[in-house]
Image (cartoon, rainbow, N blue to C red):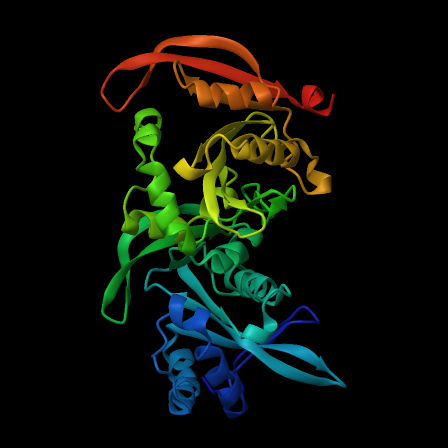
Length: 379
C-alpha cells in the first residue's frame, strides 16, 4: 500500500485517527517519557527522540505487511488546529477473524474520553471493514486506566494471567478481555467507584503503598490473626503490594470495594474496611468487614468507619452511592469487639450459623449474623 496515502481516516467529528507523520515525533517523545507509559508499556527506558523517529518510520512497513494497522490520534486544539493525542493499533493475530487492540494516550489527552472514542472507532472499523470477529485486549495487571477504556467499550473481562507479559527482562502478570463483533458496546459490569469519605475524625480512602507497614502490623497482630485467619488478606510485603496495584479490579467488576481507614488529620493508616459480596438485583445487598490496628482499638474508629461506609452504601446511585438496600455482617462467637461495633452501628442480630467459623488455632465456633436495612439506617 502507499503510506500514508492509503491509510484510512476514521473520525467521529471530534477524535480523528490518521497515519503517523514526522510532525508527531516531539509529542510521541513526551508521551513515552511519561511515568505511566513507562510503567505499563514496553517503551524503551530511557526514551530518546531518536526512538520516536524510529517508531514513526516503522509505521509504513507495518501497514504494508498487514500485521499492524497503526493510527495516530488527533484532537482539536483550538483556532482550527489539531494536536497529537496518542496511538491506537489493530494488531492481526495471523488467524482470520482474530485481532488485538493496543493503545497509549498522551498525558495531555487523558481524562477526556479521547481514547475511549479512538478504540470505538477502531473496533467499528475492524468489525465492519477488516472481517474481525473477536477483538482482544490486554494490559499489565494494575493498569486500571487501560481497563476502563476497554470496559467503556463493552469488552468482557476474561481474567488475570500470571507472568505472561514481558517487560524489560521481567515477566509481569496481565489482565485480558475481549469484544465480539456480535456484542453490544455497553459495559458488562457495574463499576463501583468509591470516593474518599470523612467525618472529620476518620477518613476512608483507597489503600496505598505507604500503608504497608501498618497494614501488615494490623493483619499479623495476634488478635487479628485469631479472628481473621481464614480471610484472604495479604500477610507479606509482596502480597500487599500486589493487592495495592490491582485494587481497582474488584470495584470495576462490581464485586467489592476496599478502603483504608485513616486518621483524618494525619492520614495515618488505622485499619481497613471492605464492602464485598455485592449481590441481588442491581447489587442491592453487600457484606461489610473491618479490622483495626492494635494502637487504634477502643477509640470508636471502626464504628465511625462503618458508619461512613453505610452512608455511601445506602446512598442512591444517582447521588454517587451504591444504592444498597441491605448490608450484612458476620462475627465469630467470642469476638465481642466486632459484635459491639455491629450493634453500635444499628445492626440487628439475625441468626447464628453453628460451627461455621474456623479460628487460627483450628477450633471452629459459631458465626453470628447481623444485618441492617436502608430504611433502618435512614430512620
